[in-house]
Structure formats: C-alpha cells, structure tokens
Image: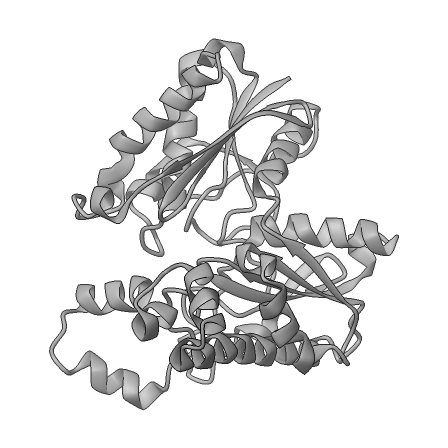
Length: 353
C-alpha cells in the first residue's frame, strides 16, 4: 500500500511516501522567515503549502490516484484520545475555526483531505498535539474555572515510547516513562502504563524552548500584558519570540551550542538554564509517577546534542536509566497509524463541535 504523509511545521513542511512500512521518498520543504512574513495568519499559508506539497508528490513520481491513503499529523483540534482518526468535515471545520488557536500542523488536515478526495481514498490524522489522557487530579490548576490542558508532542512521544518499550523488552502499556521532547518546542510528559497522565503543556507551561517562554512569573507577566502591547502582539511574542530567541536572537539550537563552545558567556548561561528547566520538569514528572520510573527518554532535534543531554542527565540520572532517541519518529508513526486503519484497525470518530 502506498501512503502519502504530510507534516507541516512552523518553518518547514515534511512529506514522505511509504510503501507499507518502508519509506521510499522523503522531502523537507523549508519556509524562510521572509517567505512567511507575507502572511498575516497561518490559514493564509494554506494555498502556498498545498502547492508545495503537491509539487513534492509529483517529484516522487506519483499522482493522487497512485495512493491508498493520505495521513497528516493533525493540529490544535479538540481534545481527543490517542489514535487514528478519519479527516471528516468536523476536522476541517475546526481547522478553519480553531478551538485553541492556529498552528501550522493544522494545515496538513486540509491538504490531506483535498488530495484524498481527488482520488477517492481515505485521509487520516494520528495523535495530534491535543491528545488528552490527563489524570483528573492533573487538571487542577490552582484557580477554579482555569483547568490545565493537554497539549504536547503526542505523535512523537507515543512513537518514541513504543521504541523505548522495545529496547526495554516490555510492552509500553506495562511501563512508567518520562519523555522529554526537545525541538523547536519542548514538552515533558509522564507516561503511566500506556497513558500520558500529566504533561507540561507546550503552549503554557514547563521549561522555555527556542521561541516560547514556558512557565513565566505571573506578576511580571501581568505587568507586561498591561504595558501597552495588544493581545495579538502579546500572543505572538510569547509564542514566537520568547525563550532562547528573546535572550540570544536565534531560533537555531546549533547556533546556541556553537556560541557557547566559542566562549560566549550569555549563550553558555542560556544553554545551561534551558537544560536546568527541563531537568526540573523531568523531576516533577517523576513525582507524578511516585518515583517508580522505568526510563527517562530524551528525544527531538535537540537530543542530537550529547552536551545538552549530558547537562540534563547530571540532574536526573539517579531517578532512572536515560535513553536517547535523537530526532523524531513522526513520519513513520503517521504511516503506521494509517496502515493500521487500512488493515482493519480501529479508526476513531472525531467529535467536532
């Protein structure tokens, strides 16, 4: 079976073709800041991204008619259980009227549905960032009516959890794992017996990332919100120009590490502080699991940095063994999710409004 996989991100769109479980073509389409600055919203990028995705399909030597299914990562949809979902009208409706704000990953659902409809084949999403398996106690925030929510790198975290389980020789559903996804965004979660029962919400909480501030001081944040910027300006700053970017003016972790190794003191400080905050997140999730932890898993693009992983490890290595899976397994995870559906596995129904 031929599967076309689409994974839009903030500054790139990844595409791949799988023949069953084997990747036979892949391409990463980069989107420069100059290119994206011409759009006032993420939804406005849709025609441009779809044209580029269809061009990649042509470069792979395929047409929609050659495919058996199209699968995309999904986006900031309504909170749903982990699994594979058909891209229905309800999914598309929530992309155009997003319940939790815009994200580039949402565009993949529309593109996948468009290509699939042309060929009369199914289109799926698998484990979008809004997967919610939180324990009831984890939803309590400290202010009534303001519940904590689950937004994390569910697709890669679930895929890496299963890979870690293979290495440990046990089913994922029997393990307690702490997984830290470290990329352009970061998210840390406690996986208890196959469910992510608590997460540091990538949109609001936890350690800072390359462009997000993470858990900011409440009173300082209130003062900033009343200092003059509009609501939209504040959201943009906290989503795209905070974290490492606000200190060092870069969104590239490799640049941070190079500057640190070259002796730049501020880069060294931010490098260490980022690792320090992620280590605190991991420690918090260990407490959630009553310190009964089978492994700590470090993944995402930043996990390619042995120095950074070692910086985290010095804080948390006494909790549990540390496994490192650099990069991400998202494309293969999407393909496997679609393949399971095509082979008669469960396809869940997206709830919609």
